[in-house]
Length: 214
Image 1 (cartoon, rainbow, N blue to C red):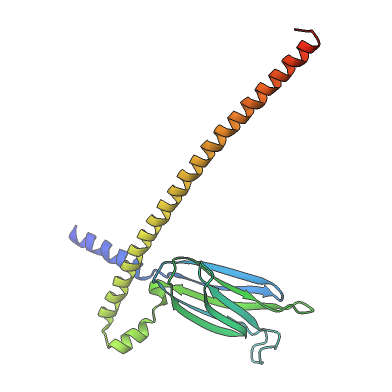
Image 2: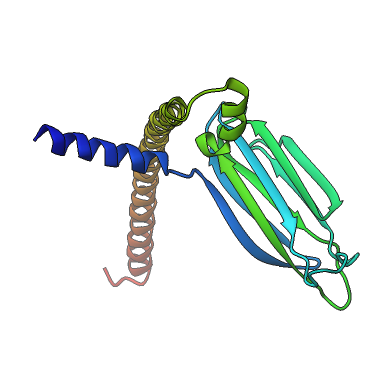
């Protein structure tokens, strides 16, 4: 039984070490268009991004038309990175504000339109750390390095749980406020309907009295 539990724990730890908190994608962008990608990043979390235009003619220089403008902003609009008229770039920062951080790509309008393929890799938290550099700099052994990864992964999961709990509390508060506003609106709607109905009855009664039908 002990061996079974130990094996289960090792499997769980192995899965945790494989967690990759980030996005790696390839997409196309037409000239004159804009594409934005958002990532929910916790406060004090490290994030690293890398973008590259894929050369449509491998072995030849990249065409002059294949240039990008890239901007990374915080939830409150603060700039973390700006690449103007570039074909590749990287960014790295520690988030001061928690929430959706946005990376926007756009190109100048061209005639005829040109489609650009972009490779974009965005990692956050544990996945953003360069473990090879940490191992080289600290001269740590493989086991110790794996333990460091595990510790950071557990810490990241723990922080994410607190973050989700805070978001849940915010949503519950929003629901309570919305329900309160809806109840108030329903009450006033009922008052208005009853008032209109009363006015209609009074108007009809007055009309029939004038016509001497009542």
